[in-house]
Figure (tube, rainbow, N blue to C red):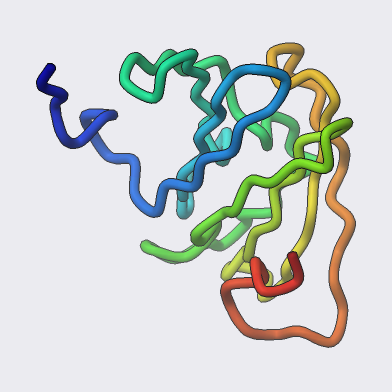
Amino acid sequence: MQYNNPIIKGFYPDPSICKFKGRFYLVTSSFEYFPGIPIFESLDLVNWKQIGHCLSRKTQLELTNSLPSHGIFAPTIRTDGHYLYVIVTNRTIKKNFIVKTSDPSNQMWSDPLYIYGWDGIDPSLFF
């Protein structure tokens, strides 16, 4: 069998994938665009459907005065079996944070929990 690459066509850089409750979830960078962090779902790692965004409320995503190629950089998605977690850097405000949900299809991700003492990018090292 042959599969196409890339698995998601278009502007979806820095993908991260995780299996949660029998399905695969994929998130990508969204830079200075709102809503932030598109999330996709798949049963087979080949056919993907966008089910929303992790950051869909303005209280979750500060992009005021964001420059081109700033904003949300390289999110990482992981699970503990009960929740999906996304850890990411917002270069516009120079902060790293985590959001979580127990149901990624309901569009109700938590407000950010900021990580202090780490001013660099790629906070996935915390996982």
